[in-house]
Amino acid sequence: EDKVVQSPLSLVVHEGDTVTLNCSYEVTNFRSLLWYKQEKKAPTFLFMLTSSGIEKKSGRLSSILDKKELFSILNITATQTGDSAIYLCAVDLTSGTYKYIFGTGTRLKVLA
Amino acid sequence: GAVVSQHPSRVICKSGTSVKIECRSLDFQATTMFWYRQFPKKSLMLMATSNEGSKATYEQGVEKDKFLINHASLTLSTLTVTSAHPEDSSFYICSARDPGTEAFFGSGTQLSVL
Image (cartoon, rainbow over all chains, first blue to last red):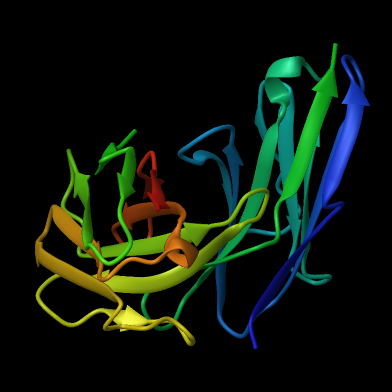
């Protein structure tokens, strides 16, 4: 059974801290791994990763994929209260109906 | 980026009534749309995959007669919760994509069944 697991489930930090969110997966037909941020309603797209070892960066956020060890990390440096959200990891499969397998999510709270 | 519109954003209904939720892709044609359910503080649970012009594919444990899905055009999919009961109260969210691109999400519908 295809599975995506995120850790930690929740995290509380102070502004300025750096956080690392983890996503591991076990799937049969991997195409890509995606990170989304969900604040109140619609998840917003952060990154799509298809190749191992290539870091993707957007401002204070960065992410990398390891296809050998089957995991990805999302780093947030110099956290701000606006980073408080649920961070969702999803794996896109090559076969079937192009559905995503979502992880459990990590709930991040950044305190002022 | 591409926009997916979902409405209503919030609906309150009496037990036993049916509720329809619409999901539209505004600036691209979505051959595939997905419907999710999300419980408080939990991740997205895929309910079904909606394919334009064909029957939806439901995930295990999701009642197809309870959650009717129609994808009549390349820009519109609807989810109808039939004979809603309080246990159906939840946040429902749709997404749309073309293969090879990332999925875009609607803003969700908070359903409360009294």
